Length: 471
Image 1 (cartoon, rainbow, N blue to C red):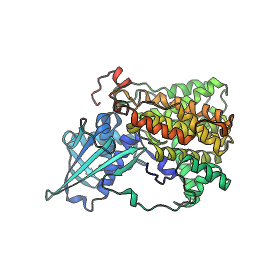
Image 2: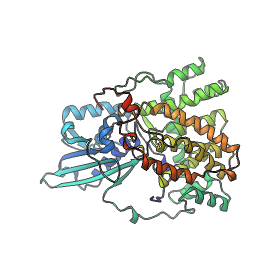
Image 3: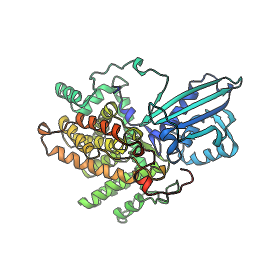
Image 4: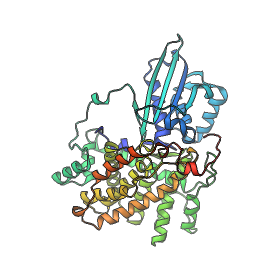
């Protein structure tokens, strides 16, 4: 495994749904391709070829849309998502695309964006090749791999020569993380924040985490107030808004701050709290499925788990503002352990690599915020993942809707349960370590049949056959 250095903001990225590997990654790849060309005005043609999982579920995941947006120079962090459909319609109808928003060339959607469903690349199932033809008929081609969580690797680059940041505490696995915390007398979030200072000033890190949380809150707010049918052809109805209205029982509010106060005044009975956690998770992933703005946590398909559990802590456990910093920092480190030791790509490891990892992240983070020590934090993460091992990725119609949206509610509830179990246990007598479960997850991923790895060739995607024109 590549023991790469990862920051909080590598694990948590702001982007557009519905998939970090199939949408955000290809968007960034197309953007990167043009950024590395000195003079785009010399280009007369661009062609994109999608392979493997990107080809098989690309339309359902919006890969075609993402590539066109990346070529157009739009930023997934700031782009007005309400303009997504009009922008894509304009490209398709006009047969033109404006590279980086500056230079217009011919672009035929059916001929210049190819879904090669029977072809794949050896390095990773999520591969795309982009070719630019210059006015003098010479060409340049690059192949990129979207390896999960919005991470993109170019085929020709040698990451072994990439300069390493000098961090205070090297962390390659859970055991090393625990030893560093014990030796320095730090909890996990404190260690993470000290390491982050190698990338930027502490204040910038805090501001960045606050932006991540603000974005998560905005996504929950939008999802709890949007009704209707999700796009894509499955005719899935949004449920978060209905649940929000039912749980608030007519309590008045006119803005987000008043809404949060209203939630705090609702019943704290177990059933109601359970419903709120599910509502928060549904809200995020319904927004994700509707091409809304979300935060990878560590992926888009699993974006609802971490914010749902953090909302649970802030509202029902009376969390403080500083707890948000601790929660996000701790969650990022657990996500990084899985990224280094296994995968966060469903195309490589099935849904255990997405919902399983997000549940482990949320479980560990919640445990720290509830007073758990580093050993208990890692135990919580282990418990959460242990009960997601082997989970397949079988999206019906190739859309990030069924079973993806509901799985976020399950991951959130499991995270809370795992935290409670860890807080009530003695980690020193635990039989399974976090490192052991990460190793097991990776071995399970290698053994898993490819039809259960985000290809829509097996599982629910096969037993519930639906005819969808875009899939």
